[in-house]
Length: 138
Length: 138
Length: 138
Image (tube, rainbow over all chains, first blue to last red; front, side, top):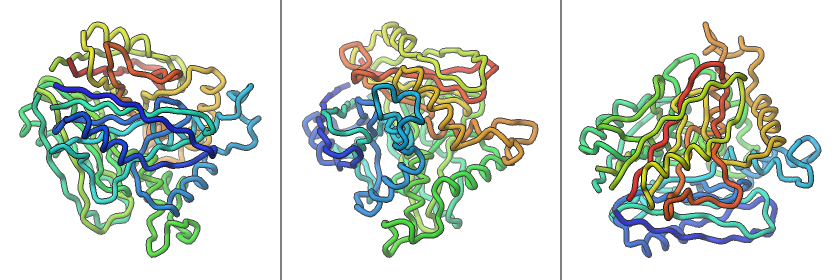
């Protein structure tokens, strides 16, 4: 069994933003030399997500509006976590969008359906954060 | 290390429906010959889910009502994604229910608690869609 | 390839509560002797979650309030599942918080960002329930 590990770094300038990282994960997979196995991609921070969905700007706008409705940032005083912080809502948005994805690796590629793309979802940006790619297989 | 890959195909006649696919995944596991490892089951489409919960008709009805409340289909014009489409809500429902499950494989079986069953969750049906089963182990 | 399996048992005295199980998973990892691989941690029951977030008491209170708003327990009669049961809301809360996490194993440790901790999330407590830890690798 082979394994490969790589960190991807981000510094998002908005509070909330979605970044397509599919090409970065594909590059890590090529570097790994693994042909058959599983590829884990996870946020290493607890106010961010990694998820798979569509690379469509309108949808990303809709996600932002929807997440803000389900877990509003304001008023920040509604959350007990917000003592010296203002990011409680980001911890909730991340639970809806998820921490991680696991993708099948088949014949050296990410085994995807027609529209699947991997995104980093930031909910408390404006500082450096990381995503972990861990691939195991042969 | 062994690996095995299988696609399951669906054509759901409703917009939203849940289908128990546990027996299909167990069949794939038997075909794989793998006794110890991990089994990934994921929707290959971004308006569908794979999740684990109870095979109880009342609960599935409750899920439909609840998801419709959290991410309403109507009015479709509330979503920017809905230009030539009407399925933005399906992209949201799928995030709540999840893209994938990873199940332990132990002594040749899915290593489940007493009520765990695997479901395909369709949120934008009436066309052919796929689920991927990928098993790695020994 | 090596694999290791361990069950963790809980009997939570509240209906809803979050328990930090990071040390239990680290102990299972040491017992496994696995240095590189993947570690699956999943609830074996369908009204409970395993998730990764912050070990901060205020945030856990905020999660409870927020989940109760998104999927209220009362009135129990609003759910068709609640025939001889009263836990339909727990099946919904568990979908938001998730069934499982997959954690990278690197150099014999859980490959975590600075604040990542693993929690058992109980939404229908007051009876014995289990979490499964399954580790594969080398």
